Image (cartoon, rainbow, N blue to C red):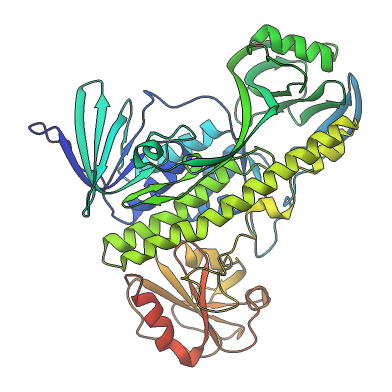
Length: 515
C-alpha cells in the first residue's frame, strides 16, 4: 500500500486516511508510525522549509525507547551527546562543575540515558526515516479551513500553486502552540501566563569557551544565563532570564546578548561573534479542554504548552504521537472506534501532570537563583520523573489488571536458537502487539498480529521465538514468580497479565483492538 495519496490534477483534491498538520517532531513521529503500518496519510507543513532554531535540546529516556522502536536510535545516539557537565560561575570565577541531569546511568531495564540533541538535528533524523519509508512532506501548505462529517473531514489548503482540498478520515493537528487545527476544531486552551517569567533565547557562535560543558551563571541580581554547546554543530544555545522588574523587555539582538554576557559573566577572552536565531520567550502554561473533536485530534504543543523546566515539551508531544498512531491504524483496519477515546483518556492526564511539575520546577529554580545558588537551581530541573519512564495508564480502558498499565521494561537475554545476546526490546520492536510467555509452557496458535515469545530461565531451552533469561533480569523487572502471560501494547505498555492457562482471555483482549 502506498503511504501517500497523489493530488488529482483534475479536481485538485486529495483523499487519504489521515491528514497530519505540522511537520515538526510530533507530526513526523506520527507519520513514521503510520507509514510502517501501511496507513495512507498526507503530512503538510505551513513553513516553506525546516526550522533551524534549536528550541528543544533534550531527548529523555522514554523518547529514546520510541526512537529505538522507530529504527532511528543508532542515529540519535551517534549525533547526540550524553552526560554533558554544567560549569557554574560567579562571574569569571568557576565555582563547580558536575553532570547534573537525572537518569544518566543506563540499567538493564532502561538502557538509554538522556541525550542532548538539538531539535533541528532530531527533525532531520526523522525526515530521513520518513524518506526511507517512502513518505513525503508537503511544505508551504497551509490549512485554512476544516469541516467534518460522520465519515471524515475535509480540509482546505493553500499552497504556492493555489488552493486545494484534502479529504481524510481523520485529521491530527500537530501544528504547535498557535494551532490552526485547534482553532478550526473549536477546541479552547485554558491556563495561566507568567508575565514575570520571560527569557531571551538564541543560537549563537561563541569563541573562547570549552564545548565539553554547559556554562551557567546565576545571581539574585541578574538571574540566570546559560550557554549550551549544541551537539553536532558549532552553535551555542543562549538563554538569559529577564528580570521581573523590567516592564518592557528589549528586543533580542546580537548587541543585547553581548551586553547581557558582559554584565552577568564577563569572562576574559570570550566573544559572542554571531547569532543565527533570536527570540523573546514568554512562559504560558495551558492545556486544551479536549484532545479530540469528532474526527480531529490534537497532539504536542497544539494540545499543551508548559514551562521548559525539566525538558518535557518535545518529549511529551512525541509520546502523544506514539500513543495515537497505533490506535488510528487499528481503527482504520476495523478495530472498535472506541479505542480512539483512550487517546485523550491516557494522554491528557499526563500533560496535566507535566504542566504542574514543570511549573513547580521552574519556580524552584528561580528561587534558588535568587539565593545565588546556581548548582541547586540546575539540580532542580530534572529527576527520575522527567525521564518519562514512570508514565503509566493504570485507569485506562486498555489496562486489564492491577499490575498492568505501566511501561514494559527491557532486559538482556540470550536467543535460544542462535545463542546470541538479545534484548526484550528486540522482541517488542515493530508495529505488533507482543505476548511474553514466562515459564516452561509453550504458547501456540496466536493471531498473526500478535508476536509471541517464550521467556525462560532454563539454560538448555531450545526452539524458535524462545529467549533465555540468563541472569534473571527479565523475571525480576517484571515481577514474575511462576508461569505467566504478559500482553504488551504496540506502544510498549503492559495491557494485561494472566496465568499461562488463561490464554483465551488474553486473545479476547487483543481481538477487541483489531487483531
